[in-house]
Amino acid sequence: MGKFEQIKHKVSSLEEMVQRVHEWKQSGEKVVFTNGCFDILHEGHVTYLAKAADFGSKLVIAINTDASVKRQGKGAERPINPESSRALILASLEFVDGVIFFDEDTPVSVIELVKPGVLVKGADYDANETDPSNKKYIVGREAILANGGEVKTVALVEGFSTTNIVKKLQG
Image 1 (tube, one colour):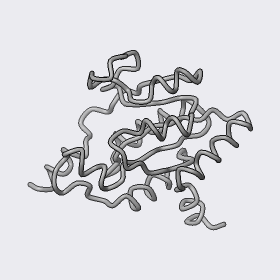
Image 2 (tube, helix red, strand yellow):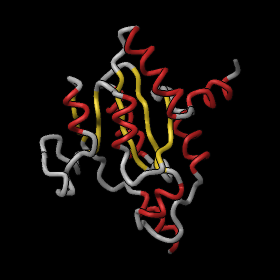
Image 3 (tube, rainbow, N blue to C red):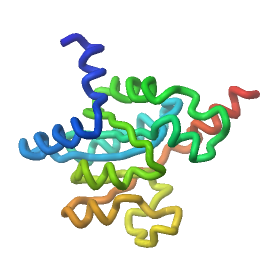
Image 4 (cartoon, rainbow, N blue to C red):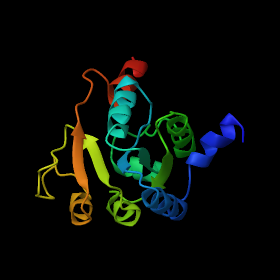
């Protein structure tokens, strides 16, 4: 299989990913899960994802579909890159083992099906927050903890955000 086919193989359906994660776990792998839009990949994203990957041996990323990004109200022009491009770019990172899509407003149902060992978000969230109405609450945390998993956060790299990049490009 060529390099490009290997990259494309990392992007899969939810059903395929559930099966892969099950197989990985059977082989003793520790599966890490995170999610986001990852619209314009930048240093902050790469740093965050690499550090998230360090919490286990396999990293799965769930990305918002284009429709899901639009519902987040990040701006009429968002997403800049379509979901297929965002997935391919993320899958090209060597430390990423799988990429899936979610169309809901939150990835909670995906987390409940994938059952990763570690759930990771940026440090703008709080792994100990238990109130779902608090914006620092990490969606899916209860499902992870109920399965004996861990919820972790990673410090964000200051000065990097897709929103700021878009503003800069707009002049």
